[in-house]
Length: 154
Image (cartoon, rainbow, N blue to C red; front, side, top):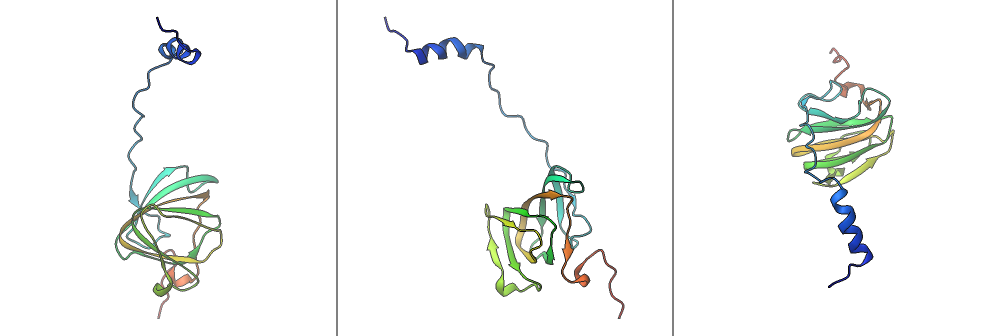
């Protein structure tokens, strides 16, 4: 007859008392809609967690069509970006300069410090996950780029 080691004995005694582990609960599908009006038209956004309009952490996903551009802007808090699909070309500075953009590909992450002037372009259909501290804010470096400002009259 075999003797059980102390560890094997614990497994025999404790395992039946533990609840069975079922499959992980499925999370609700994301609710996609047009991105807020502060973004150039054409992007879609889904809130993953939190409330971007309130103080506290939040996470969103932003889906952009090929060629979508976000002009130079900055945010009041650090933002963490992760590419979920496609390629996001990102550059730093006050003018959208395609020659100085760096590609972020599937799985790449980057943290953009608060106040950093940056811009982006989607190469292919691109989805990014963004997490930050709310309330969300986006200030365009050039007022003429801000979709919320009325267009200048000639």
